Length: 393
Image: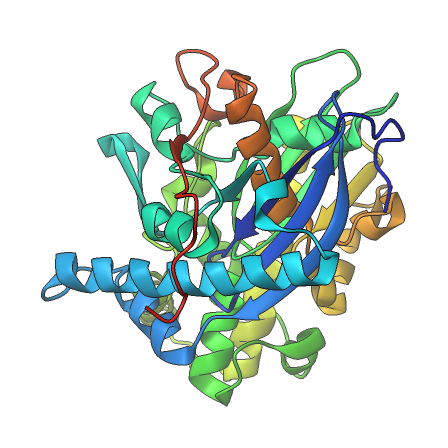
């Protein structure tokens, strides 16, 4: 996958990403040309152990002894990150000394930009020790300190990767969905649109035991419930808020869904109707919720686009991709694979780029997207020791 042809004077960076689904770590080793365009050298995916995933999920809500548990989880996550780093280096045949830095996003467990903070669990000092490579992390907090949302951060990278001579939208289908609007010669726009896979995965696991709804097959066994869909959207003020805006598991979680289902049941009972919700019908409705909120945001920010390029795990759900196509008639909905980029690589590659931008003293945010007071260099550096310690220590 070649994104930049001039590979002279290349620098190498590793990007690590564990998203809101918390199922694994995506890692890419990328070579950067002087103009900042990357070429993926190797990629790896490492599963997050089930007990660590359960603890990370639990830490999204208040609980006992949080500080200790969060620190221990951060250390455990750093060891998973280190394993991913060793994998991509092994696959490439490259030594740690050839890598300029690792861009490590960490795992978001709180996102409260309105209150002036966002928390990504990470142990970058430990990761530097385990790999022998400089680590750049804590990308979001500087934007939040400048009164921004701290998210989404990928639009400036999307512009580098996907900018062209016509209007296009880049759609990321992770746990949360976000879009970037690219217009030739203009500053990118973008924002989160709401849940993508987050509620779908949660409901599927609760009712089937599976971690996710493969291909959307279970949701296709149900029927979307229009009144429930309308209630889910109309009862949540966040959907009607104007950008800049971002969200996460703090808002869209099991409690959010239960409260909406309970409220909808009361409304139906009051009107004399029997609810009788089937779990697969709720799943089908949640699939429609993702598609409809994405489509409405795209129509708001880019009503003239006919080109929507999709990345993230949701690309693997053909039922969801079909719903998005139906919700956006006239738009071509396609994977970033059509642009030569694996959709699973894009976010990890973005954090490799943010690490590159940090060392280049280049702004990593777009104030028009996040609402920050101005452009800011994002992240902080944890320099590596000369010799790494054992990953088993």
